[in-house]
Length: 241
Ligand SMILES: N[C@@H](CCC(=O)N[C@@H](CS)C(=O)NCC(=O)O)C(=O)O
Image (cartoon, rainbow, N blue to C red):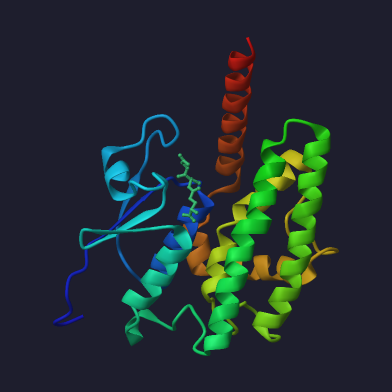
């Protein structure tokens, strides 16, 4: 746009991370170009740039905007929304009404603290009992979120109403976990008998251009999960010997 400042955006991430996917979706929805910098060995050999940009948590994603780092995926999505709020960047992700904004932030925290945490716990469980307990908690969190969808969407197609909003972006980062759950545990995260609204939401979200551009390929995602599972099993065996 004539006279507009040139913005330099760099994203440090890994392609399969649900947290990074959120940020990529937000950038794509705002029509922003950025340099994508993939961490090559996030768990054993973090890059100097990552250590320097996120010295507190040393995790991806990190967004570097004109040399300044922003960490934590939910905060990054909010930052993108606020920093790129001009009309040509499309509607705001967060609702205009302060109460609706607070609710969107509340449910976004719930997604990470309850839903994602229990799903990851199920993936890492070392006993059947631990896995069953974690899956029970995951199901309960999905059911709660199903009600939240009803509340936030007010009968419209997305959490954000007629268009994708903050919660849609936060939850969409978890769509790949739905493939993983199905491939490895025979359990889908969003299942029509348990959460018909969220299942329909996911189908709707996946066909958006932004989703098609950003969400990773299912087979690639499943292969990556398998590789990590095997690496964890090998590491556990090595420490037990
Ligand atoms: N709360 C963080 C979580 C980020 C996170 O867990 N990132 C993972 C990749 S999926 C990571 O960097 N792991 C490397 C590590 O913890 O050492 C966010 O929302 O950005």
